[in-house]
Image (cartoon, rainbow, N blue to C red):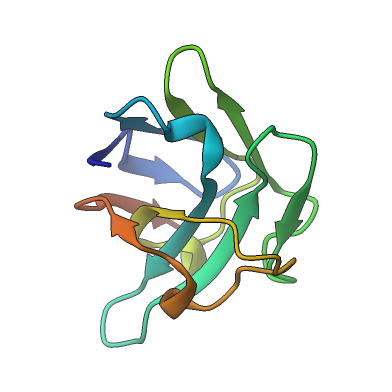
Length: 125
């Protein structure tokens, strides 16, 4: 599976932005899809994930209620809708794909088998 993230940019605090992650491969619909981000000088952190069929989502506390992940298994694309953006949301956002293994959270990087190249989101105050 190859992943291509896009949609990043420079926005102001309070704005919204939607990231996309396009996947290649016929097995996209079988993967759990996650989003991570990495702020300058910090470690990559979990943002959220969506189950293979879109039926379940799970988010980090820092974005709960502001961010929403969705997916379109026909278009092989997963989305990250980000609302009420804050300066602390600034970072490079990565999408990732994980083969289901019976886990539920999928919040650690080691769970994910494939990674996109990242797209930069900058939120100005």
